Every structure is written in C-alpha cells, then in structure tokens.
Length: 253
Image (cartoon, rainbow, N blue to C red; front, side):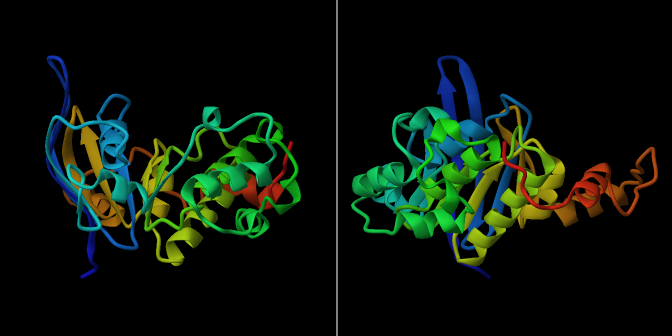
C-alpha cells in the first residue's frame, strides 16, 4: 500500500455557533488524485484551506507528509502548491515576470520557459495574465503551483467555466502532473471529471464525510442497491460528440 501523505483525524471548524466541518477523518495516499466532492457550503473548501495552512482549525489533527499542522505549518507550506485565483497575480507583469516573482518568493531557481512549455503556454511568455483566455489562465494558475516543486498540489474547481477542449486539455495536464509523482487534491462540481481523474473521492455534505472510495466502487455499490438510470447509458455523451466534431485542439480567444 502507498504511503499516507495526508492524514486528517476528527477535524472540526466552527464559526461561532455554526459548525462548518464536523469531525471528519480521511487519508490521502502519496501519488494519487484525491477528490473532495460536495454541494456548495458542504465544508470541502474549508477543509482544504485548513490543510493548506490558510485557515485555522477548531479541533482535530492534520498531518502532511508526517508534519503536524499545529507544530510545523511553515514546513508544510514548503511542500505544498496551492492554485491561486486571478486576484493573486499582478496585472502589470507578464507570465515570465510572474514566474520569476514567485520563484524568488520560494527561493527557487527555475527556467520560466520550461515551466510554461509544460503547461502549453510558451508562446504566451510575454503576455500579461489579464490577456489570457480562461483555459490559459487556469493552466498558468496550475503552473504556479509547481514552482516550489511541491509533493502535493491543491486544485479548487480548476475547470469551472472552461469550454470542452480546454477542460480536457486541463485533465491531461493534471494526469501528467500525477505521473511525475505529485499528489493532487482536487475539488470539482463535475462528476464526470471526478470519475475520470480521481483514484478516490470523499463526498462531503453538511460538514461530514458520507462516503469515501474509488468512483468505480461507489458506482458499483449504488448499482447493487437496485438503482437504475431512467435513460439508457450510451457509450458516448454529448461532450464526446462536440470534441469529435470540432477537434481536440485548444481554441484560444
């Protein structure tokens, strides 16, 4: 069995009388893509922010690569990469300048062009972040999570609002990052995305984990209860049709 790289035990987070996270426990294994799924307000983003050291917990224990969150938050920050939102980028800097800026903050020596090539943005090296399309912004945001060569990266709804080509391109990027040995923690509202990308998922509702397993096992367990879809499942979906007709390549605005 793979090494446990994140261990969460009896995690609680309260805001006054409101309990956002109600004693959840789970492990994440090294090198897997692990999904946290749930409706808005379920507690998944709060849970991620606590593990990322961005939010204080109310109770429980969190270990990241053997480091205790209460004792070594600064050491944890050195081994994780967190996807930044658009507001995290200086609008007047181009992509190379932004990478050099973040590399300096991490005290890392890296080749910006090599990193941009990895996320298919080499031709946008001199462009400013605000000039990028939606898919390009998401790919660059993911690139910034890799600057400090992290063991774990956190992606919060990385494909929201993207067209089908950009979404599938981002899936390939995430899978490639995992192939390099990086553990990926992802949240998404797209269940097809979780089914394709994630080795295991935890489903959270009302601050509690209500199921955790591989997508395939969770689906099999549901089918065993006698559940049937109201319409026949086809071998392809409308997104497959769209991609087949318009092509897999990315169309940048």
